Length: 272
Image 1 (cartoon, rainbow, N blue to C red):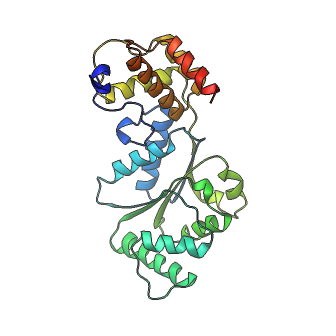
Image 2 (cartoon, rainbow, N blue to C red):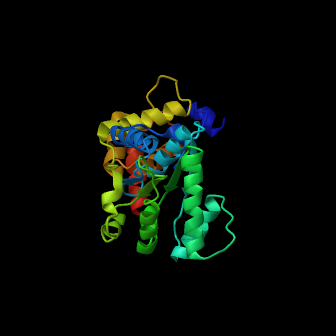
Image 3 (tube, rainbow, N blue to C red):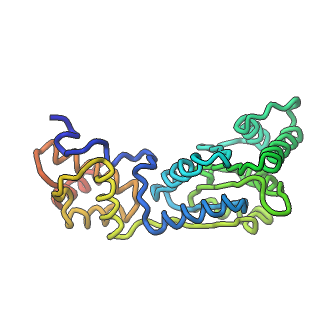
């Protein structure tokens, strides 16, 4: 029998890929998702979502993209890695992302063409243009300043570009040094790790999403407690530990994950 058959699963429950189908709506994640969607639909401009590595920011982002992508009102763009060495390089990337073909290639030309693009689509066609930037803590101060400039493009009623920055906490000192940037943030929200109860719910949710419905308990309460203590409630860390735990019960012909299995996984990781 194969891995999925033994565990009575249809999919991998603890992948660390940002699959919206496995987005667990904990209280902070649901709040962030709802408030982001409201701010984007109202075209309020700049949104900042903060959280440490592994708190689920990218999965939240993919879920929001999926939700908004079903509505023709939106024009959605995404940057996964904003590592640009200069303002011109960043502008060149934005021009390409927006599908603009300028006749000239100076910084001023690019800015003018982006402004025309935003007014044509945001006003003439009444579309909501959204730019998502993941790993936004990688932005240089000069490129953060460029984003501040883009926030100046607006009508009397709304911002023409909806900007969503998903970033680790280290972005804060950078943006605080940019004059008037923090004042333009319409939404700032920090995603914190899960508590013990949410950790248990996350594990159960992911198993259900993967097709587990046998009715038996796959992770004992003691095992969940140890997963929580070891992960400190970080979703990515939870997924890694739980994946390794499922491998162990398949390899050793066990019917459930108990505290001994989790304990051995944690001890083994200390030696790496």
